[in-house]
Image (cartoon, rainbow, N blue to C red; front, side, top):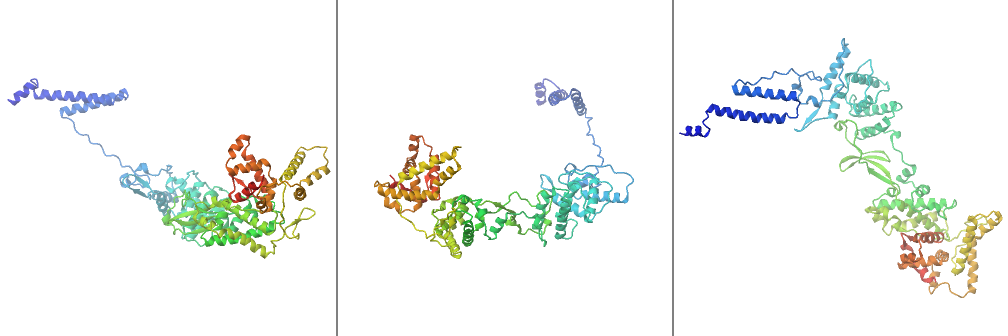
Length: 635
């Protein structure tokens, strides 16, 4: 009954008819898939694929289909080992190092056969590692294994084959190139240094750095240096690579010989002296890297330069001892320090097995280079010249200021500790040393010692001789109380400006004698004499030129009174607004550029006080009290 029901549901078809229908449906579906897959193929290829598919399907329908047996492949011989690929399958053929193939000539000599057999065996000594993802060639290990295998080989190849491989290794050279190299190496070992292509020389360097063909590290080092010295003239590129390799080899091996002096990077002699605590005659050197321009100082002359040099030497000795006691080095601030060279890699560019080296050791190659351990890893440190300009400027200015005071120079100089703040920022040891009260006493005490040693009397004021030179035997320095009429000083200044304009716009009618007379009128000494003359005239004028603070300003040093007399009414008003914080509105109302007035005021301050009084648009904190006293007293 069930079979009859299936017969009715299938339309009355027999089992064979049903199978045939199913095969037709499957065949049509497969034809459609084949059409989609082969749609983009050429027409001829598409027909062949369809015909092959029909034949396979027909055989399957009739039951005549049998799996075709693929014939065995001919043995694939490995050209380097002479064995089948199955025996050398740890390294697939496509991952092998390629080299130029050559036809083997007929009628080989015994030496030719020996060398070709030796090279064939050498090529099989490749080292690989497998990590389940990739097969990695180990160039350093392969270099050593193949090099040791060919270490004692000597050859006499009649031809010299060109080679241009940038990073040569044995396995990448052809048979003829290898024989050319071994022949050249044979001559080198016999002391015959002949020029040859760069790859061959580099390959020999690789051998020596891996200690191939030598009995000791010292022998390898000696041959490496000898190679450089004998071939560098014709191979200039060796000067760019071999010095670093030689130094690296020296640091990674126990070698008793010293590095030749010519291999060391030379520093400036002054830097070497400072690094070794020799501070004599360093004024000119430090002045080049100072924020304070001591060379333009009115105090620096041929006469005073030895004093400055000697006092500076004494000060540097004291500062060096002080910083050492604080766990810091003065030379680091004056010159710079050794810093880690992050680009350094041992034997960079060469396949060198570090396990073949004796072991890394700390080595001072020169004052500018040093091998050391950083966090347990080998590192190279190189000297970086980075003088602290503000710190040097503070030292020079402090030494000069103390010498001015002790020699009775008419103008004082005031160093500012803020000059060195940026140089010690984020440097804890230097900050702790510099901002200690003891630091500010070191330079004055050192200069005092120098003056006592050399008999420099601090109570003398140097006068001038008739030829406008300084006279050290002048009378003792005394300070006089001088009252100054600012209005008359301003008049003198206006007259001087007019004379200067006449000198700038040269008039041919003015004779040389007249120019000489005009020049004498504006000399510093004559200006002081004119001041004393106006002091007498001022006695006849009862009008006060200062306010109620006249006593306060008289208590200030003479240079500040001189500075007050050199200021114009506009500059005084400018300073007053700067102090009160109303400068910007003051300048806008008068269309004045503040920078130009800053420069004029600072120029006057340099002439009298010996330092600027405005920095960064503000009054220098060290001079706030003096400026306040002047502004309170001036009308």
